[in-house]
Image 1 (cartoon, rainbow, N blue to C red):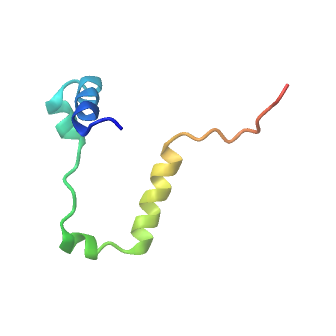
Image 2: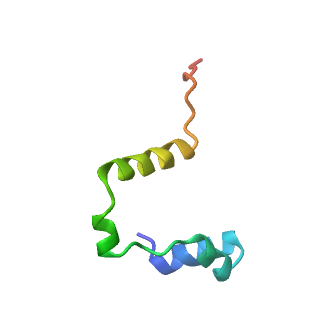
Image 3: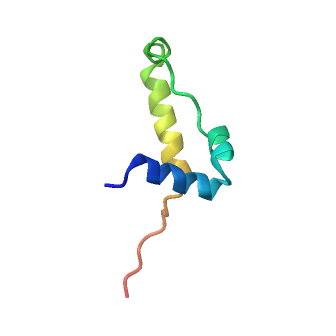
Length: 63
């Protein structure tokens, strides 16, 4: 498994440096904030992320 440092530096390189990467990464929620997140909000965020990923929905054509 790759180390976090290796993944982090590769991401920073792809996004234009560590400062640009830091701008894109959000701060994690505190425990108190996490307790207030509803199940429907979690499901909505998962759904948004899944559909944003760009699944190809057309049928597979085998020759």
